[in-house]
Length: 382
Image (cartoon, rainbow, N blue to C red; front, side, top):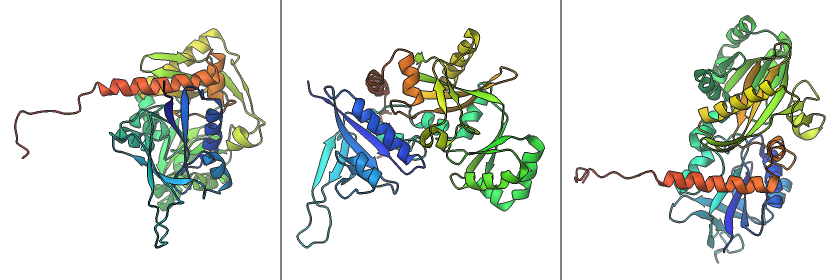
C-alpha cells in the first residue's frame, strides 16, 4: 500500500511561531515513517509559505533560500500544495519562477499555535480545498481562540468561570480613565490582563498594584484589539487532555502545573524551565470527576473535534473549580502537557499522532455525507 501523504504545517504569523517549530519537529521525528510520507510546509513570520525537507531548520535560522515558495491549492479536485522551484528561471533573467509542481496531500496536520493558524483562518483554507485536517473546524477553532467569545459560550452553558470583562483597544486609547475606573470599581488585585486572541501566555500580565495596570493594558494592546480583564484567584493550575470527535471522547487524567514564578507565563513554559508538572494531579476522586465532566462540556459546547487541552483553576481556600481556557492546537512536543496527559491515560506519543490523523479522516468523511447542492427543478436563475 502507498503511504499516506501528510502535510505538516508550522511556523506562521504569530507570537507563538517558535513554539510551533518545536512542536512540528517533535511530530516529524515521532510519526510512523512506514505509514506516512511527510511533506513539511513552513510559514515564515512574514506569511510566506515554503516547502522543503529542511523547512524547520531553515525557518529556525532564517536561511530560507534553499526552500521552495509555495501556495496551498484550493481547487478541491487537486488536493495539495503548489511549489515553485527557484532554480528554474526565465531566460531573460527576470527572476520569475516558472516551474511549478503540485504536491498531492491526503491530509493536513496544522501545528500552528495562536493567530493565523489556531483561530480558524487556515482551517477555512482546508475546507475550501476539501482536504481532511487534524483538529477542530473553523467555528470551534475561532471561538476557542477568542477568549471573550469562548467565555460567552461557556457562560451560556452555565460553566463556572472567574469574573471577567472585555475591553477594546480603541476604547482604551480614546478613554483610558474610564477603563481604569471600571477596573478599580469592579475588580480586586491581583488581576490578569490578557490579549483575547493569543496563546502561550504571550502578552499576559499579573497586575498586583494600580501602578502596574496601565503598562499591562498597553502590553496586551500590542497583540490584539480586544483585551480580557480577569479576576485573579489563589489557585492550583489543573489541565486535562481531550481526544476524539463528537460524543466518542477520551478524557485524560488531570495534570497539575506547579508554577515557578508569579504565574505560568511564556518564560516558565519554554525558556527557564522552573515550572514543573505532576501527572496525575493529587486530587480527590470527586474533584477528578467534576473536572473531567467540565472538560467534556467545555469541548462539546464549542463543537471541538480531534483534540484540545482544557485548563482549569482550582481555588485553594474554597476548592471551587473554574474553567480557564481551551487550546485546540496545544503544544505538541514529546514533553508538552497534552501528549504527557494522553500518555498517562494509555496513549503513547506516536500512537496519539496516528489517532489524530484517523480522526481527521473520520470527520472529513462524515462531512462528505452533507448534501451541498439543491435543485429547484426550474431554470429560474438563467
